[in-house]
Length: 118
Image (cartoon, rainbow, N blue to C red):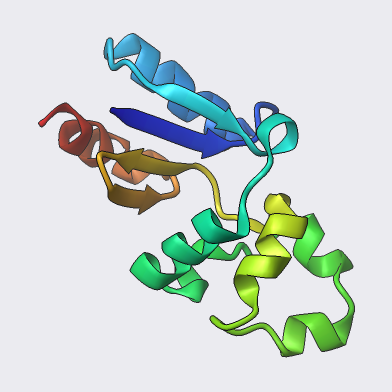
């Protein structure tokens, strides 16, 4: 089972959803805004991939954080922040039966889709 996590109005998430639809890949979409993000789920992603892979430090939400929060971010406290501010997660997160990937860069699309098909 494929679960695609993201925000429905994110351009990258929309592109990923279109591509998965075009490829005939069945998936469940989990919208952070509507469905939330649990601290446990965020921690599992951080444990598996690392805080630097999961946290989007380039987006508007990151820039809006106060300096103390940005400077103090660590693997130990990131899950609580992501649960409170799920827009900080790099998108999309794709979970295929426990195998995770983050992002959907145009140059990587074909490889991501190929992995999802196997």
